[in-house]
Image 1 (cartoon, one colour):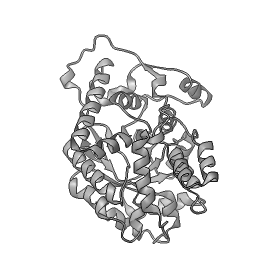
Image 2 (image 1 turned 45 degrees about the vertical axis):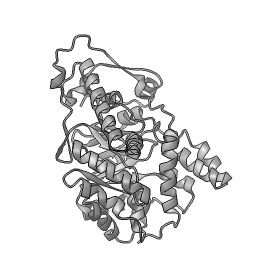
Image 3 (image 1 turned 90 degrees about the vertical axis):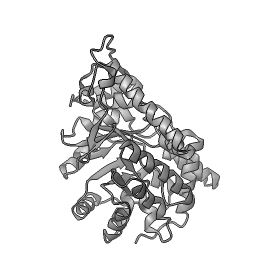
Image 4 (image 1 turned 120 degrees about the horizontal axis):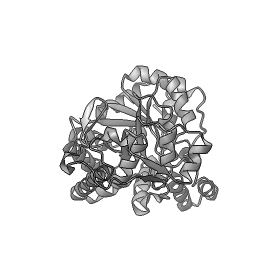
Amino acid sequence: MVNEDPTIYQRKEEHIRLAIENDGYSSGDIWLDRVNVVHEPFPQLNFSDIDLQTSFLGKTISAPILIDALTGGTSTSYTINKNLAEFAAQKSLPICVGSQRIMLKPDSHLESFRIVRKSNPDGIVLGNIGISQILQMESFTPISEILDVIEADGLCVHLNVLQELIQQQEPLNFKDGLAKISQLSDYLQIPIIFKEVGVGMSREFAERLIKQGFDCFNIAGFGGTNFTRIEARRNQDRDSKMATKIGNTFSSWGIPTAASILEVRSVLPKTGLLIASGGIRSGRDIGISISLGADLCGLALPFLKAANKGSSALEELGEQLNSELKIFMMLTGVQKLSDLAGIPKVYLPPLSDWIVQRKIQIKNI
């Protein structure tokens, strides 16, 4: 097993607290508001016929929404994960657990992860482990074991290079890492989704992975929960001036969510999976993201805040997201999610500048 940081429990708790108290330190500048959708004044639709159902990993889900990676492994996270998993089961939505790195450590509150599958026996549950932990392992058995705890339908491999550099815990070496991920994929025989952590993905990155046979991405663009700022704040509390300064220096680093969606979709085959996340806060955001090429959208902070309050807050959030997305579809004259890609749109600066300078080919999938 990996030799884990003894302060990992405290760090997990601090991540939850800082995210909830400070709205994820997000900038909110995800560029989705730089997409003007052309309004349909007289939609030839019955509002009640609008269908939000879609498929994900071979199962039908009620809406194109993923309860994205949040937390696990601490006493606080047990209640949060239980609330989220019960909600996911009731609403037929997929859920991704927080980083399972902590499960590699003895006495790691396995129940806070196990409760996700226990509360959601038939739904889609995704595992989650960092690229750094994978590359340190001599055997894939520990990963298989922690995935078995939640009976994972797929594995999210999170790429949090910037966050780990600011944490300054150990030297990072990603050389030859892609070959090891390919070996892991062959070993596990479940879908692997590459997931960023708030700084987005480029088409060059996606092309490199696609050539190796990977075609599932959660772009986690810049503008949502900002772990660079969160880590800078944590280090400030510890009077680690250098780490705080470095975190603040790179706090605006990344590719905004809207640009990340277009980047990856421009090279992704139709059979590939694109999850949009990073500052997605409303059904309107979801609608625009899908119109840009996303298959579904991941939301973390809104669900974290709601789950921290309880089941009624989760119910209210779910109803809000579904209502907003249906209204978005009505106002664009679309009855099915698959038709959103074809709605007319106008791109405004700076997103339009990005498209031109990066020579991005817009796809209507």
